Amino acid sequence: MTGEQLAESLLRGVDDEQTEAATRLLGAYRSGYWLRRLAEDQGLAMVSHFPLVNRSGNHPSVEWEAVQILLARSPALFRASDSELAILEIAVSLAADLPIRLGTALCAMDSTELELVLKALKDAGPGRLIPLPSAHA
View 1 (tube, helix red, strand yellow):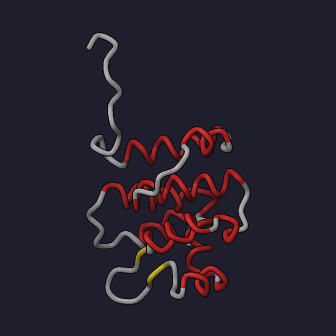
View 2 (cartoon, rainbow, N blue to C red):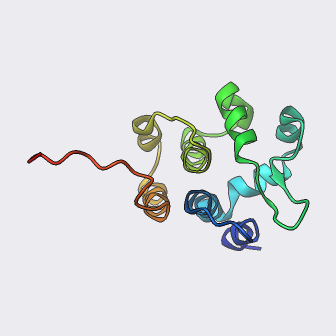
């Protein structure tokens, strides 16, 4: 299964642009690297006390709030490079309103990763981003 297919399988029944954009970002990044880690990493599941990808019920999904809590408490638990962590933080920021240092996150990325993030921001919907005041206002 490709990362994109994995993301789509986690979006059945989801009607939220931010969650969709965040899930698709993780699906597009390195063929679903983060979606696979969140679903399969038993160490992360043990620390959070339940799976980070809920596959039970009719609508499997990422448990965004649980990922947010783990990231806020100890990002080192994820054993990830700066750019890998930046992608995860931005996805969680979109889906669960995790405050992040955007400049730091963006500086850790290469141009391919940046393109994925820009697409996710666009897909999250126009209401997600706060427009800057006009210079003429």
